[in-house]
Image 1 (cartoon, rainbow, N blue to C red):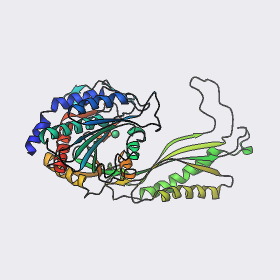
Image 2: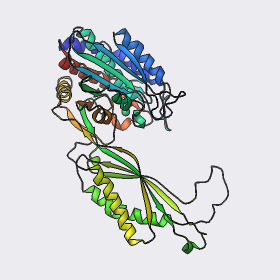
Image 3: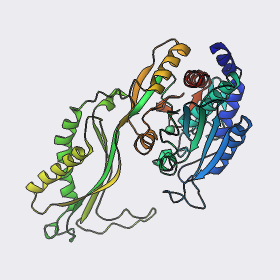
Amino acid sequence: MTDTLLTEIDQRREDLIRLTQDLIRIPTLNPPGQNYRQICEYLAARLMMHGFQVEFIRAEGAPGDSDAHPRWNLVARLEGSAPGDCVHFNSHHDVVEVGHGWTRDPFGGELDGDRIYGRGACDMKGGLAASVIAAEAFIAARPDFRGAIEISATADEESGGYGGVAYLAQQGRFSPDVVQHVIIPEPLHKDRICLGHRGVWWAEVETKGRIAHGSMPFLGDSAIRHMGAVLHQIETQLYPLLATRHTAMPVVPEGARASTLNINSIHGGEPEPEPGYTGLPAPCVADRCRIILDRRFLIEEDLAQVKGELTALLERVKAERPSFQYEIRDLFEVLPVMADRDAPVVRSTAAAIERVLAREAEYVVSPGTYDQKHIDRIGRLHNCIAYGPGLLHLAHQPDEWVGVQDMLDSARVMALVLDDLLAP
Ligand SMILES: [Zn+2]
């Protein structure tokens, strides 16, 4: 029976290539959120031919949703011949901006040897295509399967997922009584099971000063000098401290197994001049200076502690600088999530990887966040992993590509998971 299933996959090689190319040729750029309806309709037409019921769901009122750029999502469901679990494949259909440095057409879907090129090829239209082929092959080989298969294509993962998976989870679409197993075919590579991701806290810190003439800075109070003191504390106290914190989460790459902090931006003093302005700036003491911090934290850390650590640092600066005033604004926060290694979808995927690739699955955790957070936190469904073809370091890069053989192997793994969880 397994052989029949794997043969069904191999027979779909050309179909898989065409499907991936077609998906890449629909430019679903985010921002602003282009062609979401079009890609949902393309997939719906295909899945309906295989018996799926489809629903188009617009995330009305979600961030970014507008009549010009509606946040469309597709959920397709196929019922089996008897009651049983539902296995859900969730892929985001949006892609990030193209950027510079391409030598291929970013929306051409060009096939060259084993590689298909294009924006979103690896993140994650290749994974979406692999899951569609896996489901179609499984249905052909096992028409009497029990339970249900769902395939969703969702909006806005690249901008937080609020118009996509978060919205669907709020509608109860990822409740454990509706869906029991979720695979997100993000490009973690065909032999790796991604159990979850680290936490995120973005914050803006502002130091305050008093404006004065630049020739008499003693009459003012420089917010930039205050920020310099803050940065000095971050450099000499916080960075060494974070480097000592290591997680038991199997994060890849290994550098991300410590707590990390990035200072995304800094701005102080007068606004940047308009492009093309040729005059000199005015001489002023800066009365405000802002930085944006991107703190990634570990499952062993507590968000309140992460925030408290920064406040304590700012208070230390304040103790040394009498006129120092600051403000912290929370911008974004996500708690770490990690599926249990004994969860059914994890065990099933590990066994399938071993059968298809003849090697043990590697368990990893992503340094950055993805839609699993919404399924875990809002949906309260913890039996969820990321598993899919493609190399993570190619995501968001010029000349992004996905390997045809990697997609085929991943599709084989996904089909075996379906067979394990839904066999009659
Ligand atoms: Zn992605």
